[in-house]
Amino acid sequence: MVLPLSDLAHARQALITLGAVAERTLGLQLTPSSERYIGDIALDVAEHLPEQWTARVENYSLRVWQEDLAGGLWSTGPIAQTLAADRVRQAAILKRDDGTELAVVKDPHLDTYHVGALRPGHVPGPTNATAPPGVTVQPTASAAAHVIRTGLLPPYTRSVLQAHAADLSDDLTWARETYEAGTIPDPAPADLVDAYVRFTASAPLVIAAIRTLGAPTGYEADFLHRVEVIVTAPTDATGPKPVTAHPNPLGWWLVEGGDELVDLSLRALASVPPPLERGHRAGSRTLAPAPAPALAELTVRRR
Image (cartoon, rainbow, N blue to C red; front, side):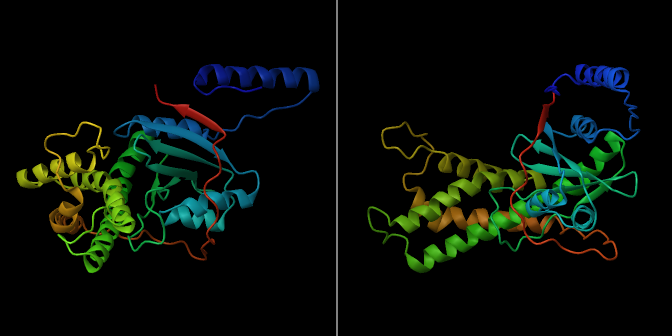
């Protein structure tokens, strides 16, 4: 029997009925746990977070399965230490509409929960970006959401920006060492085009992070908007192009756009100090990298 969690009240009532039938027909004595279901906690926290989030629950019947979560974790701190040192049977995964994912696990010894960010797919490893440290929260949804909103999401955004800014700078340095603006053959070499395509993929993420971390000046806001227009302009010659799109986007990237976006990224990073690492528990160890997180077994969406 599958109980859709889109109707939590119906699912709970069905489980209560199932327990009563099992007790009456099989003589089984079912003792309900006083511990709240981690999926319910995740949904409550999501209601107090900005923007739209979904929640799913992953169950780890075998200890080796929790290493899937550890392998996909980006955050350091208590959540990483708990996954390394303790048996974790389930976790809730909060996912924002932009793809940001946060893992929530219960502390096996205390009535608290550890929350950490999963590494996003658009930040491939290895990277020199500072990993966002995880946070420990109380089981009260509003208080937990406040800690996540102020203590985890800003460092996560900073880490994303740091990783992409480094990649943009590396690509730009390579391109300038290999090709000189104004002497690029036509058609452009495939490796140079690939580097520009990576720029167009990273630029929207970088722009969003810059806007989140600070308040760009009028000039900076205009520049960021111009970059958005240029990198999202259709490349198909048969498609309509915005009148503000650059006639030579690849040359613009080499001469002007790439440098200025990297500079803005560095200024945004400098305005937000790197996060401090949370305290470590004695005797913790680090798990070796494991495969990506296991597929969700249950999925619920905010209404």
